[in-house]
Image (cartoon, rainbow, N blue to C red; front, side, top):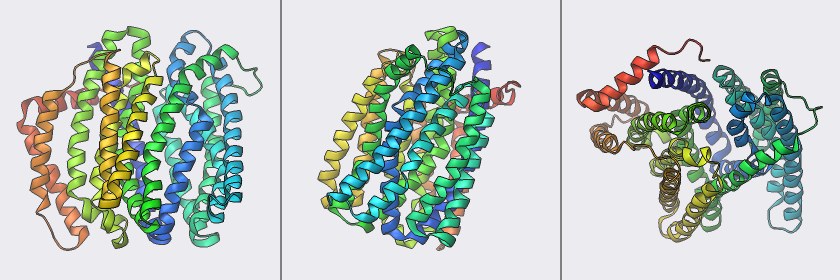
Length: 496
């Protein structure tokens, strides 16, 4: 009964994240076809490079401490030290974010002066430097809101940010500045407004104050947990960024645009499907670990793992089945060269997304440095495979390298984590769901109605119906879904 109630709360919070993330992803679905057509492949590829640089610089600004917020929150609240934790880490985030923003601007100027990068790219990197500070502070604020398990508030802020960013970005692109410069100017204006909203709510929930003197012991503990995760984040950025650099060097800006469009679409779809699970699960298993120990945590993670498999494998097959009409509709005919890239990169993102469940042991035992080792190995494989496969295979070589690298990362992370906290893996469910997904893929691939709209509208419901029939005929899968739906319908009233 305890596990049933706990799973109800988990599923309620997943549903909050799913709705909020779905609305947020829809903003990307709106902007994606507009921007790919308005900017063209070359400019869209450059926009992808800037986004990757920002990911790296923001990671340096956060120094992994945003992860320590979620890890230390439950303990700080139990000890009556939540305000001290929040005041210390928010002040640190402000200082570190400002430093990282200045570093991006300074390094960009230096590289431009040396002729390493061209002047237009230097201008874009300087223009986007303030986003480093804004995103660092926003991340810290949202981490406290997430740690409080205020899922509705978290998603309201996230959705407002996405749509305000969409509106201002398109306003600047089409009516004020234009191009990549206009896009990032609109984004900066929107995020500057919403970071203020997030800070206000985080202060209301935690009672932090920038005037309170930071606590050295609290900061030291946060850095001890977070710095290894900085290496993890940076290797993740390199894992996502290295292929695009090599495509630009070995192929062309146009090829980079084709690859970036497919890569971004795959990442957006993965976020819609799996990010709600990842956002909801970590605060819950941290709290269960602190309050009830290893056995209860392992039991919870085993059920969450089964839910992940049930969501992940059919999603991979489904995206592979609709890749051509999906890319043509959302990106346009200019990007059809990237259609076959989509299922490979998407599969890599989905498999790697399982670390939120399967690598829990490393987070719980604060062995986060080992995560960077795993992803570092995947990075080395990624760069090597890209250098080997891009010349003969083009962007498909980069897609194969991405899938292989992310697969290696999740396998190694799971192996490491299970040394610290082991729970049952749903091997039988994996085999059954994989077989059903393969049948569903074969059932819809033959559907071709000429226009991409009609083809997509036919393949999706047919695939869903075929999958539903097979799941309904499989007793174990049906029992799992019934259990989840039954527990979800009795969701805890107090869950936010």
